Image 1 (cartoon, rainbow, N blue to C red):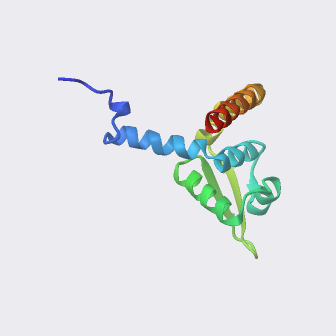
Image 2 (cartoon, rainbow, N blue to C red):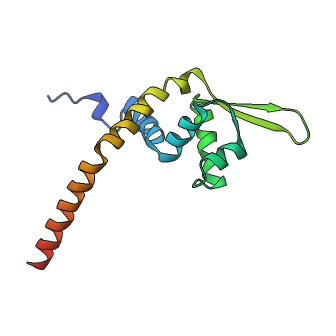
Length: 130
């Protein structure tokens, strides 16, 4: 009988949970929000200004998911209008180092990746022409 690795079995609940979390953490908006909140608490509109390419809807969904996962806290101050601040939790702060490492890896390897893409594209064009 073949024993499979439970981490590679998509029917395993732990595998599904890890897959879901990695999808969320690997999302570009999550990375940008985590990096931005790594500088300190921000209000929603501050986040929008600092991440201008994100839509209001995507920022709302990203913050809600990060709050649900325990990575971001949301504090409401009862003023008129209400003030809402977002901040990284301790768990969220623990994500800063791996996110920074991935960002650095991307910066360190962007030229090599572009060269590989160019070679691949040229090979594809040669095959199509043949």
